[in-house]
Each structure stands twice: as structure tokens, then as C-alpha cells.
Length: 267
Length: 298
Image (cartoon, rainbow over all chains, first blue to last red; front, side, top):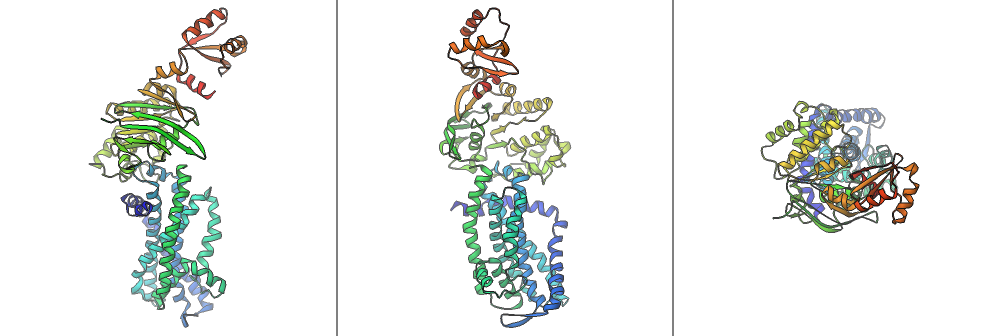
């Protein structure tokens, strides 16, 4: 299973280091969206929509809507960051900047490029979660939210694993869409439905959605974060995140490699 | 002692088609091997196998004694690649492009800061060190591409059409740099569509057509084998008699360029031609690699 071992090889780390270097160079603008987005979302969904909902029942007990949404924001940030990084940013590097081709003329192989993209998207998603978590902590300390803010760091490894899995999914589309305009298809047909119908912003009660969400890692991620931050069962959803992430990585990374080998190398 | 590059019996199928069919290629230190052929001859696929982009279906490639199929990373440590299209990293400056390229090699290039400064100086890039590559002219972009391919001190360099799109001055400047690299001991595989470039730079040529090697050797040998000793240039408008003369010798219609036929002939054939057409106006010249390409394309 050399494709799996490649994740730990120095070439994959060199690719991640390259992306990190570019990101940190623009840190002042790069850090802005994840810091502003949760505030906007909390205002829109928490204060705005929350004004009508106020509280809801979760795990058989009433909780304030703002406290319900806050963990969902963290899960949504993990998902959107990882998948958009692997869809748009990776596509631009592959197709327009030809960064991949330049890397492939060195000791870096396609397997490392793919793992580098997956690990970087996972890392970036985790970094975004850290920023969103910092905003949530401030809101907690000012009394706007009532969450177990001290447990926020425990969410980071889970966010990283899930972020990597979401990136592996995004790379499949990067490998097959002909132009960047065609990214609308996966975004509207998969990313937005998967993101919004996954108990991130509101509980799902329709039996069909409940059944569908059994195989949606984002739903399990949101529920794990919620269980940790506002108190509730965690084990089953944690198992869901880990099993689904492992399955996605085990199936999608080899598929990404196969599709990208054809697209990038013409093989 | 082994050759820097030793490729034997390379075969590659793409899209169900055998695009490379039993190609052999050898390159020694201090040697430039020109890899030539018309479009679709299998040049790019061969090159991509040689620098490890594609795995051959059959055959073996050794780089500096290391088999590519067995230890790709080690073999690639000895290889520098300058691709036909610019593939520098647009997120970084000229100087950073060299350091980031070095980060993709292990062992890491020794004394990297000095190596980068040395390359920028040699390729006259120092003035542009803090600029983004896309702001450079075509000639300087090529310089950056070649400098980047050399940052880890490879022993074998692949130059895929290094001067395409450059003005004559920039082309000659790249030639000087390539010539200097050969003098320092590098083995170089060069592909080009410029025949003067191939003739001036290459120590040996390998000519591909339809995936096979059709000739190899010095430019003179290759031209003698494939084209002939002479080329007669005759106005196509008055060439019907020449067509009949060629047909009688089992030869088809020759290449036509701007209303003139370019007819390759051996020494004996030229003597026959002169006897057959004593009053015809024509020009006799030596064969060039352009004639070879025209012949292979027919």
C-alpha cells in the first residue's frame, strides 16, 4: 500500500510546507474570513433566526438556539474550508498555475502531490477551526454563548481527520471537471446540500434526512462537536466520523490518484 | 562505468495506441543528445518516461546507474527537468522559486543560499530576484526555468524545447548557457523544433518517427542516412518532367515548400539528374534537418 505510506513521506510534507508558506505570507487577509464568518453566521442564524426560534429541543432537553448553532459553525467551517481548498485552490494550482507539474519534475511524485493537497486542506480546516473557536471563546466569555469552551482544543484532531476526508472528496471533482466554471456542479449538487442538510444549523427530523445523514460525515462531526461543547452523547457520532473518514480516505485517495494520473500525466 | 542515461527498449501505450515502440537512448557526461521528430512521433512521451513522469510498459531506464523503476526518488535526485511550458511557482518570487524547488530534493542541496545566489548571477536573474516570474520577459523566464532545474546540482538535464517562442538574441543566449553546462560535465537531452539549434548544440541526434527510432548519430550521419547527400530545389510549376523522372525511380512526389520542390538525391542520382535535365534551372544545396522533418512528415 505505497499510496498510503506516501502520506508520511517527506515529499508530502514538503508540498504541505509550500502551501503553508504561501498561506502565512498572506496571513492578515487569510485569517480574516474565518474570523468574520462565524460572527456573521451567529448574527444571522443566532441573533436573527434565533429571535424567532429562541430555544429548541436537543437530546430531549431544551437548549438555546445560539448554543446549538455554535458547534455547527465549527463543523461547517471544517467542511467548507477543506472542500473549497481541494476544489478551487487545488484546481487552480493544477490547471492554471501548473504548480503540480513543476513539483513533479522533482523528487515529488503524484501520490505526494495528492497527499500534500489532502493534508494541507485538513490542516487549513483545522487552522480555521482554531480561529472560529477563538471567536466562540470570546463570545462565551462575554456571556453571548454558553458552551464548554475549555474543551474546544479536543475538537482539533477530529477536525483534522474529517478535513482530510472532505478534501479527498473535493479532489475527485478537481480531477474530473473540465473547467473551473464546472465547479458549480459539485458545489450546488453536493457541497451545499451536504453542508446545509447535516444538522449544522438546525436539527433534522424528517426520516429520509435522518437516514441519509447516517452516511454524512459532516452530520456526525456536527453532533460530536455539539456533544462536546454543550454536553451530550459523543461516542457513536465520533465512531461515525472516524469510520466514514477512514472509508473516504481509503476509497477516494486511490480514486483521486487514478483520475489525476490520467488528467495530469496523461497515463 | 555506466552511461548517465541508459534507456533500453522503451514501449508505451496511451489510449490503446503504441506511441513509443522499442526506443533506445544513451547519454554520456559532457554530451548533448538531440531528440527529434515531427509532432506525434513519440518524443514527449519518451521524454516523460525518461524523467519519471510516466512508467514504461516495457523496457528499462537507468539514470546514473540507478534503475528508475526500482528507486525513482534516488534516480530523480540526479535529474533536472526544464519543461516546455513555464511551470515555475507563480506564488513566489524568482529567488523563492529556486529555494522552493530545492525543498523538493533530498539530500537537500548543500549551501543552498550560495547555490541560489550563484545561479541567479550566472543566469543574470539577480536584478529580478524579488520579482514574480510572470513579470519577466520570455527569455528570462526560460533562464529561470533552467536555473530551477539546476538548483540541486543534477548530473543529467532534460531541456524540452528550451527556446520555443524566444527572439534570436534570447535563443543564442540560452545556447551559450547550455553549451557551458555541457562543458561542466552535464549530460543533456534536448528536444527542439529548431533545426539550427539541434545541429549546433547536439553531439548526437536520435530521430523518432511513429514511435520508433529511425536514425541516430551525428547530424551529418543522420542526414546522409535519411535524406541524402544533396537536395535539388526546383520550381514546382515546371516540375512535371521531374515528377515522371522520380516516378521512374520508384520515388513519390517530394516535399513542396512555397512553390518549390525539394528533392533529396544521392551523388549518383544528382549526376543522373543533371544529365536528364541539362537545360532546367535548379539549385543544389546540402541537406538540413528541415529536409529530414519534411521527409518524415510525408
